Length: 250
Image (cartoon, rainbow, N blue to C red):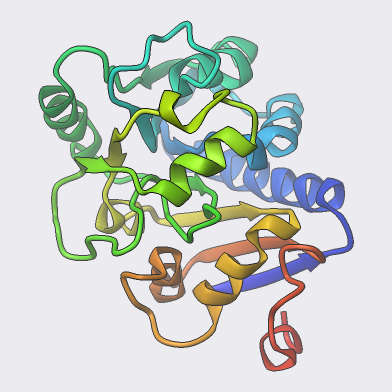
């Protein structure tokens, strides 16, 4: 895994978006369709905004899957990841094909059905973030590193749910759903390339746990270190707790 550290989150987002655009253009030169995984959350705002403005990407030939969605949350709720992706990506670029996770009715069946679509062909590029508790998608600690299921229905821990309140998606922790559909850790790692966008000081402890010490389920995003073509984009705030040994050669 490559590590890149920038002075601020705007420069991080700009460079990561340029990287993602290059990878998408290259993939579309080589084959008819590029398959991507898109993350959501406050950490992705600037990155997605810049990526959707990038030139030379034939979005009609891009097929998108997303990482996770709450169980029981209506699509018109401000915290819905389906709403987020429709407004910030799908409708902005007129995406050719996309697969949204509907957690309102039968999440187990949705996980199975969309998982079958996801498994049908390789994924070219995945955009991910890291949660304040170190989660990757909604795989909270201790994450399941073993399941081969593309998507699973998971329980959300308190730290994860509190982050959603702190980011302004919900007014109270009682409002945050306790379950979600999440792409599995192993499925994320199957992407041919991973770009992780992780700004802000509130992510610093999770970043340190992910990059230092053992790769372990209690630090779910630490598993990214096993991927041979992953790039982790940090700003000075999210990298602030890293040891000099880690930051010496980013």
